[in-house]
Image (cartoon, rainbow, N blue to C red; front, side, top):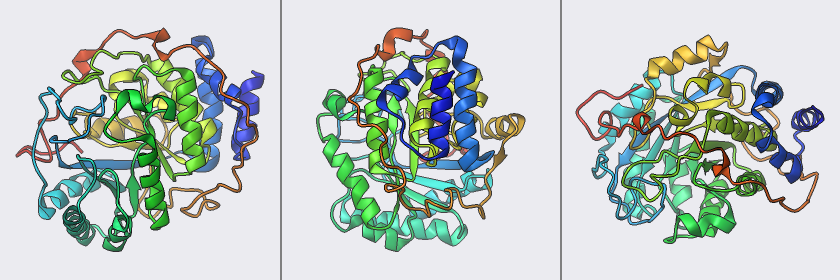
Length: 384
């Protein structure tokens, strides 16, 4: 297929595909799916070999959020029956993080619900980072605390944080449809705060919220321009009690096409398979390892994930290997920073209209959505 040959060549050169090419990946047929995966797999292996980085989430504060993000079970007015608790103490968070590290995680992601941290919250998280680093000096720590104010990123960096996560989630043109309490521009500004402080930026998207193909391409191109080191790809987990509980728009095949498109647009970036993989990819998760080079181990913030041992077995059975703590994730040319000059756009063509993501609506698998009742905030052992 000429399209795939072109995309592979561009990916190996770190050259941005055109919007039309990115859109075309999303509209390939199921008959061509293995060819699409194989092509994107060549790009993935060029920059990351067969390594898979493991990341582990620790939910420092669950629920009680004043923001109205429609996809989130912790949102203002959520009727989801999730765990609700205030800040974990540093030793509690460190204990939870240690379980993930013992399971093979190279990075621990510290997440707290809310609009953004107060200065007191930054102090609290700084102590937590210190406690984690004291136990596991080599572990990477990524903070995800919402919108940052001036100086807060610098304080997190000084405390030992390695990275900061703040996702764009969807295209700028549709952002107001999912959230009204803050703006898309607020999110971009926070990612830039993190980069300006010398933190490794992590920013991604959520697919399956009813967006069009053009919306998906728009947000991935925006991420490429913003140039984070890590791009998490989440698939909406339609939790009962949230406004998007009825959005079941994804098939395993569509999820794989989305991941392939992200890899072609962001060839040398850590592409992370994040929330919702078990719900939407299901038994086709191993194919996704040919597209991504990073996954979350165990549970998510408010829902349960695949058992940690099953994750490790899946990686081994698919012929991949867990990335060790002594291995640098990003290719040498990125140097932990950006590739803006080397990754200049090759085509500035306008976005092309495409069919809605809902055109391939899958059967709702509500049985696969399980609210987290173990790990942080409970007395039960975590899943790692």
